[in-house]
Image (cartoon, rainbow, N blue to C red; front, side, top):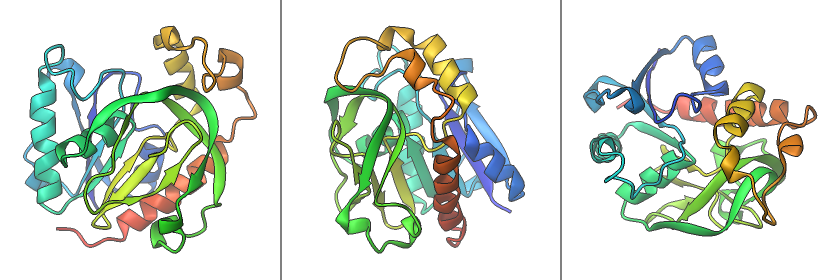
Length: 234
């Protein structure tokens, strides 16, 4: 059994499909909800740290002072050899604490768009069984440069850096394999102001399409989590 702790920035961006996987595997789950004023625990008490998404940016410390404590905790978890997974804002925070630049992307990317695995990941065990290209969920306006010694995971037409892996156990995903139908509805409701004009911004109907590939994305998520779950604890 692993102790999985996650950082949550807003009530409408939670673990999504990660929670079902963790409970099925019998892992313990705990959370720091920064929007409730909670503080992160000692990183030595956990096996995994998962850093979720949110509408704020990594440079928004003046508006969200808790970001300073979060960045320190993420840095400590990486230094302690923990499994660290960041999604969207979480990936940007990991890149930031590792010294990589985080900045506005050339396009906002909102909705279901294809990503393609990098050539560096072609034989990597974490993505064994992944297709070379598939549609996944996006909701971001920022992007990151790759941290030093990190391998790129994937790219999309709108965003060159869609993910990275460092030291085999620190993973940043700009896209949302964990997204559920409920989560998509919450985002559309809470962040409707983001849905405007843009080449890579879909309308509400397309975002909430009943035929969206949740099942495929959740199956790929489980493969990725199973790989991370098989790593030795530190």
